[in-house]
Length: 109
Length: 140
Image (cartoon, rainbow over all chains, first blue to last red; front, top):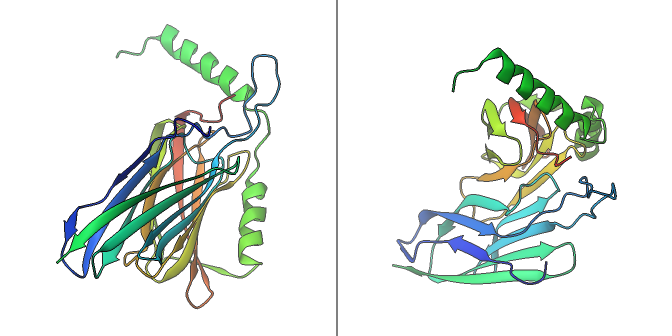
């Protein structure tokens, strides 16, 4: 699942200092649980995103440990407080060792 | 849609066949064990953490849930009817003022979703919600 992984993140472009903003993130991933079987009865091996981290200017907002019970295309919504302009960094860690990340800038006045 | 007797029977047998494919039997004790592993046997108080989950989920593959726990360091979600009870752990950083998060989870069948919050003082808080699942999300 190293190719074709789409990251979608919704962050407001501008905010006032001290504002609490809502962030929505989604990554396309099949999140194979390791419980399913193919038509020959063989277990399909587990392949999921196992960790998601959101940071702002190097400070942590949220750090999520994912288990197979998280739905396909893992979606998260959470809040963050912004004091100055900077960069949000979102990182997803795949079972196969791949790391996907995306950066969003915000202008704080 | 009007439910005729025939349709009810068809739905009934369909879902039975679906559940029988679910593989591992799931027991509530699995979730209890998982919770005990997290808390180390410490006492868990009710309140202080809010878990929002639908009463009825038509599709167990994507059940929207939300947790909010002011003053919590982390919140762990368990589903006591899933083959693996652990669902997710949210650790809140310094820039997260509300300590709330929402996501979508899989539920294999009708069961309790449990949120255990670890507070800043090391104590544990709990919230629980029963979710009725029409179509299980275990994948068969």
